[in-house]
Image 1 (cartoon, rainbow, N blue to C red):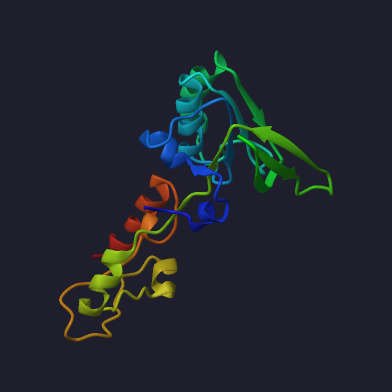
Image 2: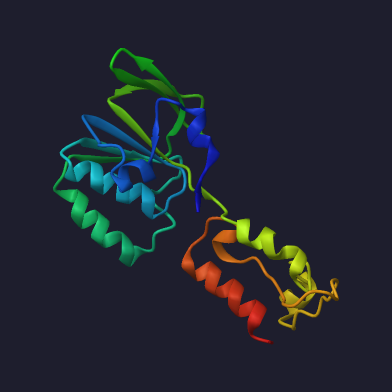
Length: 198
């Protein structure tokens, strides 16, 4: 998967993957801004907290990490509870500016005109990922169906019979994270619906 382009729109910030990979060392007061609600946000929070940083996890959602199921959330909460970690919901990061050696975050909410500013030593963004679909597009012209899906057959649970390329040697379908960042269950469901009739 590739990192979502939005990270480059805030040049003073780093991505959750920078923290997780160890490419960037968390330091001081760290804001983890999480718009995806998935594992990388909390993984970055755990890495930052374990390094001794003071951490705030912020989300524009009404709950944090909605993509992480309850049982998977428990280990994160266990790891973060005895650290200096705060959770802030229903707040949206609107901009970041440099203030000397610190970063000033402009923060608002989707529910009113309320806004404020807060200072951090580091701002970490988790905006999700873009599909890694290079292989799909590389194989598309060699496939029987040019990568096309018969949506009516898919919904009805029927077989995929599109044969728009008689020169093609195989059927090709794009599923899971090659379509968009989703969880494993969505990818498995995509695959089941497409191949159960093959």
